[in-house]
Length: 286
Image (cartoon, rainbow, N blue to C red):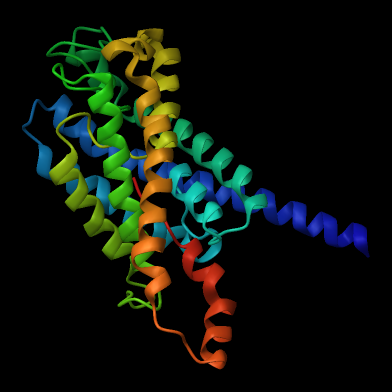
């Protein structure tokens, strides 16, 4: 009997990993696809507005497709904060993160295949990292020419800090909250706000998997490993910065808002604690 239960748990873990890979693939293809369309058409079929809205709606659609099964996780920084602050069990973390990175890599590969001819014709068959014909930033984020590493790190920390503070608020049933089923829409609006206000410096990645996996794919697909040295070795900023920002954002919300909620009656508190995991595990972002 124990063996059967163990096998069932293993199958469930594998199934959830596949679902989370699908989430990230959907988000990468549709989100980065909005960037590809704008760049490869040289602005004719898109711009900053379509990119910001396209990425946000890609996240919304990915959550609606898979949220009921997997919780819709696509960001290691958010998953890390959820575990750290007791919203999610730690044993799930490696499975979530592994699926997030694999799904992002698969999404980048899929998008590359879809736009292969466009990429080849854009710069005469060259896959460039910098310059007016650069295409590497379709897949990963790169800093503006004026941006220092210190400023870039602060940029990612602050952007992800706001992200986590608001995500915690969205899923806090003791705050104003969001009606069940509308959380993905509000998260989409959140992405639009953050990317529209904090996207200038480096594209507002806020997500280690969304940036590192596609960057690795581009290194292997023809852009070369200069994708890791470009921008004064910028590559680690969208990996480490969001993790730090997620912890700070979660801590601020807990200390400033959550611990000041009025005490609830025991029956209601018990009911809320029983639903807490499911409610908080539907949490995603770019």
